[in-house]
Image 1: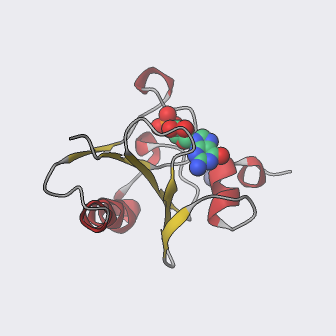
Image 2: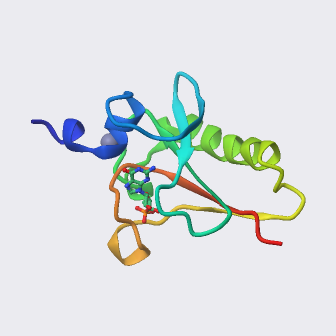
Image 3: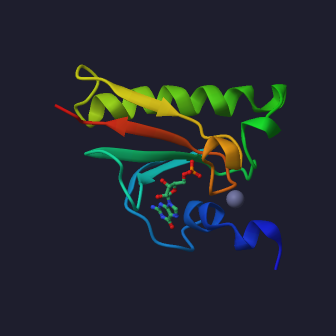
Length: 111
Ligand code: 5GP
Ligand code: ZN
């Protein structure tokens, strides 16, 4: 089995593993974090398998900016844009990353 076939976020992105999806297009998916750290905790995940922010280059600029714009839009649609939220990349083990497929956390919903 290849690395990509074992990657849980590749499987979720390909609909081969379940998730609570909120949005999907040709380049990324958005689904609920299975262990939420806040009332709203979504993951914005590119379909392309990229290990971490350390592995992006200029060719990935479009997807990274689309992830951030999607985070902004999802915050609005979840009703937390005004109250505020975090957009967070954990990078490698020392940065708290445990799933080695690039993802942007959208965290918020505190009163
Ligand atoms: P990291 O620490 O790598 O930045 O974040 C990975 C996140 O993915 C964690 O918050 C964890 O709860 C979430 N997660 C891990 N496995 C799954 C899964 O199979 N499904 C979903 N929906 N979330 C997951
Ligand atoms: Zn992957």
